Amino acid sequence: MANIITWDGTATFSAGMTPFGFYDDDATFQIDAVKVAKFCGTRLGYPLMDVELQSGSFFACFEEAVSTYGHEVFQYKIRENYLSLEGASTGSIANKKVINPTLNNIVDISKNYGTEAEVGGYVTRHTGSLALTSSVQNYDLDAWATSQGITGSIEIRRIFYESPPAILRYFDPYAGTGTGIQSLMDAFDFGSYSPGVNFLLMPASYDVLKVQAIEFNDQIRRSAYSFQIVKNQLTIFPVPKINGSLRFEYYKVDDKKAATFIDGSTLITNVGEVPYNNPTYGYINSVGRQWIFKYTLALAKELLAYVRGKYQTVPVPGSEATLNQADLLTDARAEKEALLTNLREMLDQTSRNSQLERRANESENLNRTLNGVPMTIYIG
Image 1 (cartoon, rainbow, N blue to C red):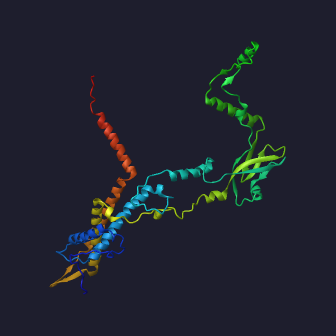
Image 2: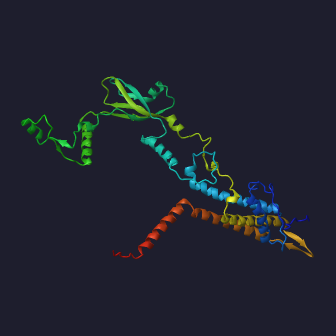
Image 3: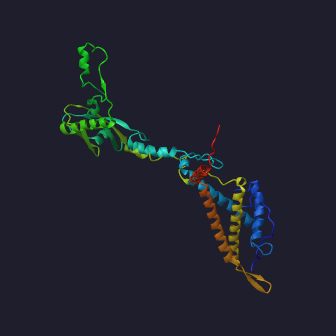
């Protein structure tokens, strides 16, 4: 049976002794690496029992624990702030920076709705002019686009073919001369002076009803201007009697599709491009380091379980000893899961939403307490 290498209780750290070397240059990490190795070795039974690991095994577990801590913390920060981070530059490191929530992306999203509502957006709205021919009622706007050298299809947004607005045929609702005051003034030769006017303030709904009444009158009793457009086939009502021109506004469909994609060669386009580096171990506070020490021990316990699972038994004078591989593995996995759950719960409790809720509850409880304080009566 091969000789089993066990830990001798000593550890000396130097750069290059961890698999990736993420934190080897950090002086605080170098000091704690030796302490963590001794801590894990003692917790695993040394010197009362042999520990089938080396100092390099503890250093590897320590590096993984720090990286796991940074992964959980920065993953939380990305989830908390991604709406503000997306579209930002990938050139700057996000570590040690406060991410202020902004409305930039929300405004960008709203601009897409603005395109359809015709109140803004990213897509250029073009203006075109169509020649109307006397007695011709139907016009092919796709054919017009081809004649203008427009590639792809177009989307008509507005046709300027309306009758004059009804409000132009509606006099000022705040002034009237129905009482004959103007004629009375003329009779006394005051007509060259300021006219006699009655002012009567009417509700806005009165104006709306008047305008609707005029428009319905045009639609029912008169031949009003109108049009119909189906798949860019335009029909004019009534049939034009003279030659003229018709102005309209449209989007190029290719422009709308192009607005979907933004060149993101130097921008954050997904969570994998948010520029968080591995954490600086020296900046992690004592609370975070305690979590890292415990997670390192769980990793070391799991690694020791795999080693003991390979050997199963070790020879002792006059017999063999069965190793506790199964117990170690079960404990290690449970401890890792408990530590991760605890860290995630703590991060959730410190989220922006949770903190605002807590602040609101504190304010409500404080006001309730102050309301119970008796008010003194001041006598001057």
